[in-house]
Image (cartoon, rainbow, N blue to C red; front, side):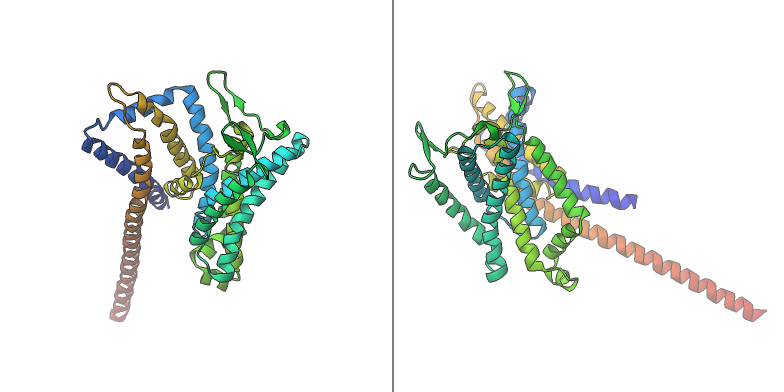
Length: 383
């Protein structure tokens, strides 16, 4: 059992490590090809970890990435590709900001209301793709990609002056939310900044994700339906219902992705609200192998590359391009696919070899018993 556990741990860690190492090596090759130092950019970005304010920025950004990646991973565990997390999160943030700006309740009611609005909005938008898949067989990839575009157009329409838009300078916002809906952060000092208060929500979601999928009947049915709908149906599980539930839950979690920023810092939704979060979350979920611990590491790594890369602008004597970090992120996603396939094949061969050795040992033991029985019969006959 110990040997099996060690091999299982090795297989779980080998893929991400190989992907990270491959991305660093390939990025270094790109730097060398452009005549630049292949080591200095990593040193410059690593030095940023010594600054407390950068650490806070990394943790805050990672909290958004983590929640969005959990939403993607929920779909992956069901063998669903929810590419629409970006649209679900932005639409949910916008609707939540509108509600927070027009409804004023005491904080103990306002905050749960805003959380519920975000969950329901994200679940509704993802549920459209879920209904199309289970009723008409429409691919969730196509449906969610189209819904991303529709969400963008809908947000632009709803933030016009004639609807809920409030102009602020050259930007269009939904107006400042009532302070009762703000969630204070953890103040680490005037020169450091605040850690988003909803970082604890990200931790809670990670724990619930692991418990539900690995310690409940619903989680087992969810995973079984994703791996083999026919086998799940034979055991009494409605695979179509589980597909719809998975999309609704994934969308609900996606709806919470923007709240750490919305309720902890921005307090309004504007056209400058970060986009592309959902697509980044796909790479993070892949790198983290859909495990809450692995996703946390991947989210911190991605946030580090985002927040430390501006240091490359100040390199002496010649600055580096910040796109180096983007190249590394892209290469990580590319390397993840290859490295996981290599690890999967290697693990399969190891498993086949181990089964073969066990069968050979069992056959040898059976042959030994047979020889011993024949010898005993001959001795009895001789007597």
